[in-house]
Every structure is written in C-alpha cells, then in structure tokens.
Amino acid sequence: MIKRYTIRTRKDVELIDITREVAEAVAEAKVEHGLASVYTKHTTTAIFINEAESGLLQDYLTLLEKLVPAHGGYAHDRIDSNAHAHLRSMLLGSGVTLPVIEGKPALGTWQRILFAELDGPRQRSFLVSVVKA
Ligand code: ZN
Image (cartoon, rainbow, N blue to C red; front, side, top):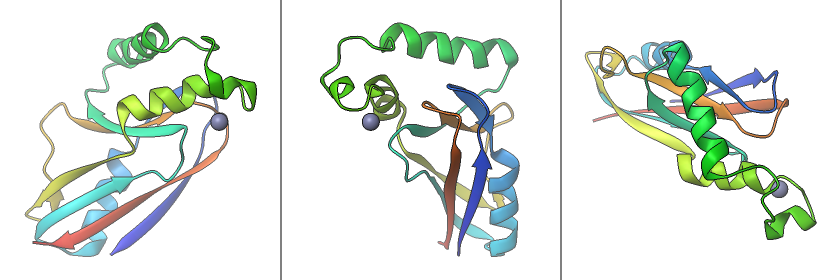
C-alpha cells in the first residue's frame, strides 16, 4: 500500500512532525509485521528521525545554517539561488525506512519522523509505502 500526503509549509525553513500521518498509513495498511518507507520526491525537502523537543528543533536548523549557509557562493545559485536547500536536503536524506511491528511503526519513546522544508513555503507531499515482511 502506498499513501500520499500533501502538506502546506508556512516558512522558508521548517520542521514538521509527520509521525501521526505515518502511523495512520501503517494502520490503514493492516500489515502486522513489515516495513514502512517514508519518502519525499522533492529535491529541497528531507525526512529524518529524531527527537522533536522544541530546543532541538531549533538546534537542527541552527546546525544546517552553520554547515550549509544560505548563499554561500554555490554554483547552482547562478540559476536558482537555492543551492543551500538542495545541499541541506542531500545531507539529511530523502526518506527513512522503519520496521512495522504489531501493526505500528517501531519507533523509540522519543523518536519522531520529521519532514524538513528547506526552501518554502510551498505545497509539498510525501509518500508512505507499507510492505508485509
Ligand atoms: Zn534549485
């Protein structure tokens, strides 16, 4: 089963907790044990798993700004001026795959699935694919 979710981002750079949507898709798939893939087809977004504590949510963005400053003299900025967003996306990755155990995504107590908008605001989407093991 593959389910597509659309989200409207509100800021230039923003992290959105999509754990609830992924859990919903896994429940709808009625897969007891398997794998769930969460994937974004955009080149200036990313998906990663970590804690969603409010301080950390700021820290992730601060780290991205330090590692890949906006308008840092990148070649792609000659045509699109959003190279930093592509480079940040490359570092974070386009998706995650997680085990499904007893009909639920197998996440640790503090783990959340986070969608990173890196060149917003825009309409975005992500895919949740669930397969039986
Ligand atoms: Zn671009």
